[in-house]
Length: 208
Image 1: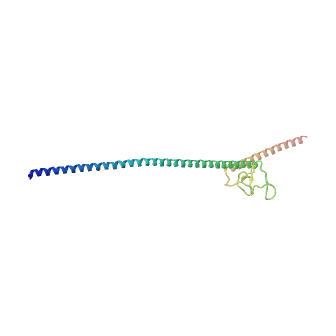
Image 2 (image 1 turned 90 degrees about the horizontal axis):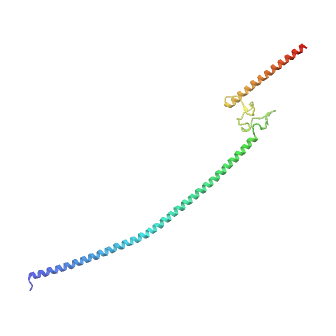
Image 3 (image 1 turned 45 degrees about the vertical axis):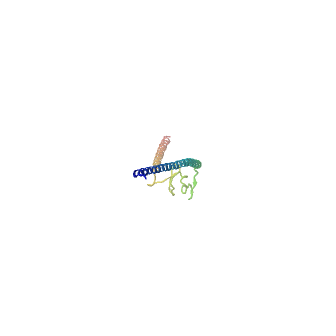
């Protein structure tokens, strides 16, 4: 029969053994679990890296495609703009050519209907030439349309009195008045001269 102390020691020893075994098992289990955890994490990382590489490749390809599309679009737009500019330029040139042609025709018409070379049309109302009424502005040298009773100047423009006339016409009228004055003076001088000559002739006749 064992003593009380001996039993206690054995019990204690057994407990320690069990505790150690449990601890070892626990530590081993923990270690195993840790290993499994680390492996899972490693696998996850490897998978993520793999996916990342593939993703990067895919992304790179996408970027290249996108850039190519943008380049293509830019090129098409530039070509369209060039074409538009070309067409615009051609149209502009055509327009300019047309304008030049019109200008040339106008000049020819002006030469044909020059002030000095204009043929006088016969008047509508009775005898005599003239017929200023009813003729176009260009034909009459740019003056406005007037009715009968207008006085014509040297180049055939109509000159009339009245407030509506411009300074230029008034100037023209003054010139005509001066010309008339000069003409009168010339006639007076001529008459005086003729009168003197007549007197002299008369004197000679008396002497004879």
